[in-house]
Image (tube, rainbow over all chains, first blue to last red; front, top):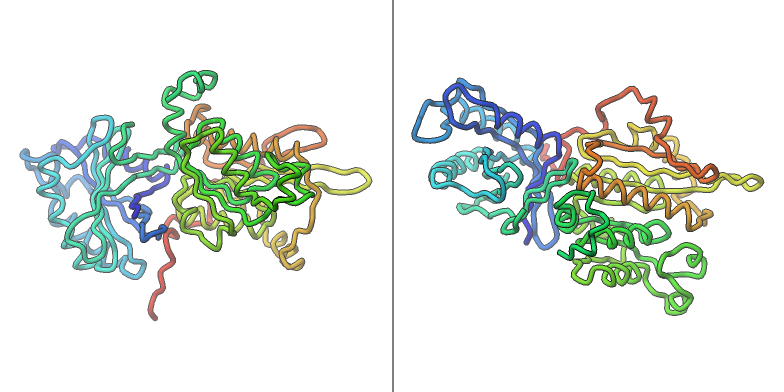
Length: 174
Length: 267
């Protein structure tokens, strides 16, 4: 059962451009990206990213203990967006960037903090899949919580349909 | 990776073979155009394929179907089988998923592709492929040729790249309601159109060039769309005049949000 996250080149460029902007006090930026599902053979899934939401500077909380912490205003916005996206079963992914090259994964802080957001998204958009995407300078990884699931599926691949085409596979060197 | 094998294409970039080997490419239609396409894709280093064709080799195919022999006519060999054998001879480790049907009868495997090269005969077939590619975020490259006139035959053709977020075949003036309606009036039957091997070769080679550039970006063009017109009498491939004179820069036909499986909304 294949799980792939896919986005077009223009959206990828927009996300990278936003996430690499310096923030007045946070060490890194985070954002939200919306997705719709496409079915693959053998119950596999494509998660197709539609649009990106950049979190305004003033919705971050100054917390030197983590790279970036967003406040309740950003979370409320995200949950409302998921709620309004219910007819299209639009899900949401928390997305951020690790500066290194090659395959990336969740840091200890990422693994401890970000999954806590998912039940909130599931509560307002229960028919949709939600998740986490972490990009690196030349790769990307994703985790998807399927409808009603308490545990994520680690995506096999994140692909960028641009020029060049990017096929970032899990467990395969660049 | 065998460095000797690809030493003459090192200008594609240091990671080109790795990039090509990771990309999944679909080819619906394995006739005169598609047989050239898969042969070249296998030579250049693509390793993952999704192929569709439900036809068997017939006598009238032998003037242009790459790899076909009279024995295949006698054996009624599937064109799909010829394409798979061509790929495996060149790339023994290739992953080829082939389907002896029309792609619409089993569309899910096609969605795993990052690039689809359509080698279909009809405008309707092209439109359906482009819609699927936009809906599931895949680059679409279309090729096609025709011969017009009997007294003074004129060979024309096109190579089109339609990519998510870029201009589509309607934007580029290739697909029109008029063309689709005219074709529909013939019940979608294009008939036994004249076809010869060399224009298919030109179109297929140009399409493979676009596909390789999409994967490696070796030209640094970052092209979001393309419409190249083939003049088989002059022997030229040039940017379409329609495209050159186009005023629009954004596609109004495929909104970014219209992707994924259609969702039925209860009213």
